[in-house]
Image (cartoon, rainbow, N blue to C red; front, side, top):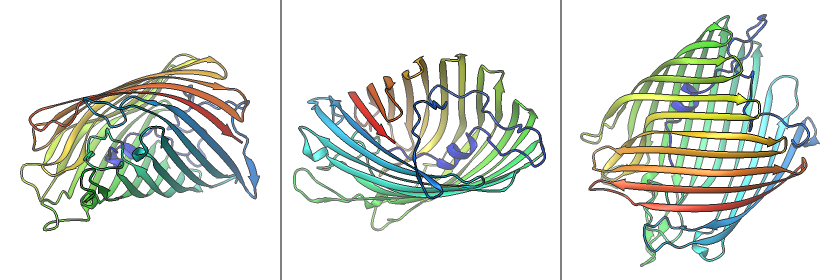
Length: 423
């Protein structure tokens, strides 16, 4: 799993969707004139839900079957296997005239036909709420717990365990915003706690310690937006982060704890009905006080743009450059520069075609290692009724690692057929 600097991505790169100012005729920060193909409602096919008191309950089951031609993410001697996944979930959404409360529970039961060591059971739950204090003031908060599995192809995976490594992830977030006529001020805070489970060595059966990776990540962001017009706003944001590892010397060779900041300035815009987005550029710095020559700083960018060439087609472009923790014994972090290009097309009202290409360049601190990763995918979704849908997807993932401390090279192809049952 790739751990992001969450405060930066959640808070400094988000479309400014502040609530309408008290007594103001229009919201100068809303960017909802046009919705992407995947985001727009489809009343004839959207789930209706089931009334439960003042909530609507949305039960859902995804049944996924497919084939992965390189389940261990190897360069040579690749092994493939078919698989099936059962992904039940239940969501509760409040139906109040003001405020909001949502609860989601979900699970993913993953089974391989040929390699039972890769079987996993993941699950989780989240609770999120919104408090509408005034028309111009909004408070939101939420929390979650998930038991997740680290993919074999993860750039931080040790790859020396019988089963894929699992970890528990606790999260909490809080945000508040207030609009003063053309000025909007937002304050956000996040907390993530990663707790890794030990693995087993495939040759000796000995315990492979993963607890040294346990970490708590904190993030705080203050942001101000100023509306130049109903369609354009400029913003400035400051993001702080702290990473505190649970296991420190002498139990492990190094303390990877760090703290840093990111300053961004940019523009949030909606140009007629053709283009909407946000671009922020600035500077980041990350300090590792317990490690020599590992501090990093440089140019930061976060951007998302959506282009609507027709009502039936959405083109989405994303770019990012920031630093992430690696928790490798000889390298504390790496600079991730990358982006993605996605096209979604509504062939028919209930038939949606999608294609995506992404690229990431990871440059590691303190060691000679550079990873380049590509992902390309094609997909189609067919909505039979509001209760039944079918999807078909093909994805290709590739990594080339270079340098004296290079990681692994691999190519992975996956094909998946997804049946969706919902109410």
